[in-house]
Image (cartoon, rainbow, N blue to C red; front, top):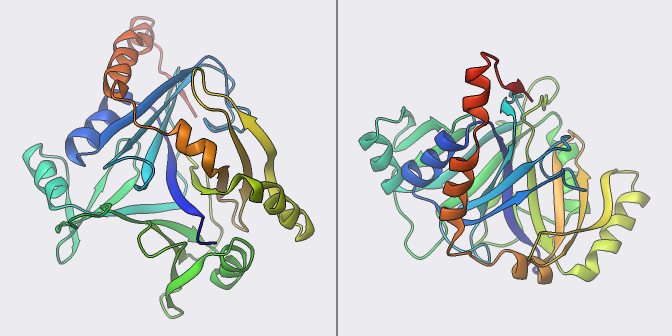
Length: 298
């Protein structure tokens, strides 16, 4: 499993302006690439919507060795109802804490040197007021689970993740594929995990030749496959193969062939400009305001 990599978490966003401000100006991430699509994704990357949408990858460095955020924007949808499924992304960046204070972005100290803040849309981020030289500041993504033991069987026995930390009393575990990668934290909650409309997706890569075997394994184990092996096209860029799975709580998991993904995910120096141009060309907010109508909710 050493060849598997944690890649990104997918967030649905309703307000690109505020979202771009948060990731660029508060967190200090860079726009790595921006892509516009005329119709919905075959693997429902943008959610269950079939209209025009965009994808913006943001992170602290190239996708080859950084865990990043994928921001998906569906034209005409202004907000998404949050569930209790996504519990936060944790990063170590004293610069982000300093940026948030300077921009008066709300921060709440929840532990010594750890600040909770929210991205537009209500997604929680935890900022540790320290910096990690020479490594990716994104430390972990925390997802809610209803049965920690069952989830560990899935993520470790079937998906091959290693347990880095486990606390039965607090019902939490920290998993990963490698020491130098972003970790997945599973946190037990009472009751069901609700995904609502804002549900995200966590993505990993593996050698392309492993994808059919992974799909076969899930079939044999009677696990949920949301999208069987499929090729996804991005205009003017590499075509990738993906399999989309769901864990016992319904968290969506994308596995993509690593070789083609490295090609697709090369940093585009024009990424930030492409995003700015797309936002400037998007007159949907003005149209809805002029017609005195609210944007749709996801």
